[in-house]
Image: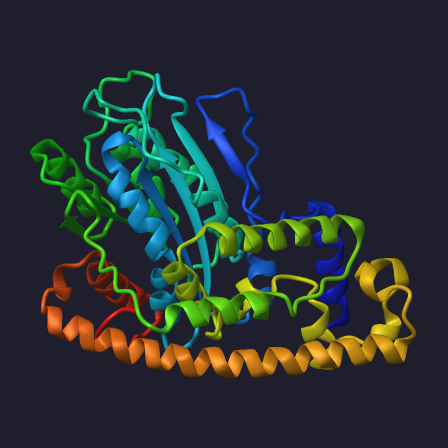
Length: 404
């Protein structure tokens, strides 16, 4: 056993550090492409404590897609909560490939897979619908980037899935572009399922989207041009969002200068969410963070309160310069008192959010039942697709309806 640990340590040192946050990449601009290396199968097998869902949304961001882009901003936390509701509470990693067409401000932009959904969402908030206008878009390039520029794990037990979302057919006339049938062959070899969601009712798009889904061992479904997601505000949203901000303020981070810079980026993403996201979206985020799967997004790496309160870390063993600046001048007893106070506040806030989240879910169930059209919504069709496909990887969902 000892020799295996030593071998693993040497291997890890050789391959170098792997970035912890999504890489914002751009294709069609001057920014060089940097691809994160995959973890080795051995590291994946040892490090993974829970089943994993890796999902990449390939999203058309041209001018006609404004409604769907806004729907994505509103519902990404609900989608994460739905995926996280499997019995095994899987780890959720999300990524995004935004695409337009040649001649637009960009062809593709790539956000790599990460369990730090806050940072991904903060980047998603920056996307606006623009460009396009000539019919076909760079779908081939977008799918190629989703398969080849995303750091998919090599774990055969992970549910790896792409959702292509758009309203226009691919340019099949670009001679220097890899066409989607060839890309999908690679996807299938890597165990990546490709689903196709069509916005609107363009016939050429329908034919291509159905073929993409068929080749990708996935599902095809159609939604309204506006996205077709159910947007249900509740009287509990504002209070949940307010408590969630207070909960975020209980976090303290420690580590090397490099680690703390990464942690500050995560905190900045959270601040952006609280300042700019809708109340309903912030309530959905709080609900996800309250789940077992959402804990990793809430805490991230090097969160001092959780590490010390759980007994995993002795604060006196941490070098002073690696502590949060607010604690560095304190005596150990004072440091422990601050951490105990934040841990108690966190426990109280989590309890309050959990109670309100239950009331919010009951309120939404009543509204959904009263509407009677939930089965055709984006939310429901996504959930049904995930539930069916994830079952093949041993992930099972008991709920009949998604989180909203």
